[in-house]
Image (cartoon, rainbow, N blue to C red; front, side):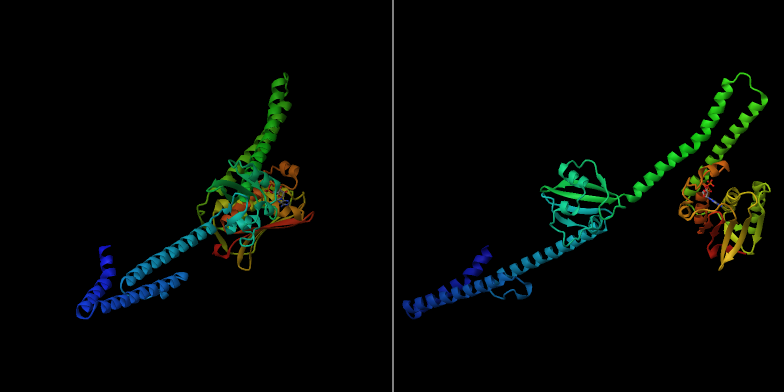
Length: 431
Ligand code: ADP
């Protein structure tokens, strides 16, 4: 402060001393004229600097800040520093804003800001995608004009956002969204949308699976229970009746046993994400073992042919491969009427190893083929059950194929027969 006053009054003091000297040497009039001229000069200089400052303030730019000396130089250099600081803060804020924008754009949820009268103030790209919005054109539009589902409008107006709303947007009815609103700030609301399509699908699958397993176990249990009750109620049972009841009960318990065994296999395959323990599997020996199993299962009802057209072996897990190949052979036998033929084949397609089972059985209509590997999916439920099927065989085969980076292929024609093949990648071919 003192420094500033000193610098501001220096010209006045200097000129006052000069005026006193003029007075002493010349006259009072000369001194006064001198003082008036000097003061006029000083005032016009300040006025000029003020003018430059006011002009510069119209469009403040660091490059064009006025130059000056004396106390104005001080003021301008402080101003220069202030503007520079201000510009840096602006740059920092812009960078921060960009950062936040990038973070919200990368968020796995849709985020949308609604003002107090339901107009969209901002949304991230995912929210725009969920609700079919245009982030530029639809800003400040009323959301109820753009998202028109009655349940959404009711949810918005009710204002009770404790539980999320689950709905499908009109433009993607296969999409399921969980929508949550949160009050914040000055009567604004943050709307968060999450794609739960996959989650719902998994939840439905889980529910179906539990229902299917319960149903599958319930039928044989009811049968066994029925026989047990009958046996308890009947006083004079003869040996033939007892052995028939035991035979039928054994059949049902075998069915339950098969089902539980397949369920355990499937669960182990699905939960085991570690790499499979591998070895070079002697394919000729494996094919012969499967062929023998097939002969036993068919009990001479079908001519079965074994063809080994490739000398290459396969790197993989013996137990899993035997289970997958055996399942396909067992299906071919079970779905081929007596007299129909079956061909078990090991060959190469291009250079890829292929295992296939071809039958001349009942075949499968095209609409069923994409669903065959779903758990418990059967074309003919009673035929599958009669032949001891659990409805899980092909699901197991598909998992084993995937664990070996292979692919299960099905080609079939109703009443003509089917070919089920597992095509393995070339890298699994071994000598
Ligand atoms: P399942 O225990 O019922 O045989 P799978 O998962 O092995 O269960 O097969 C699913 C369904 O695919 C079967 O129920 C049957 O309808 C059909 N299927 C499988 N293999 C054949 C085949 N070789 N010929 C005709 N249909 C078949």
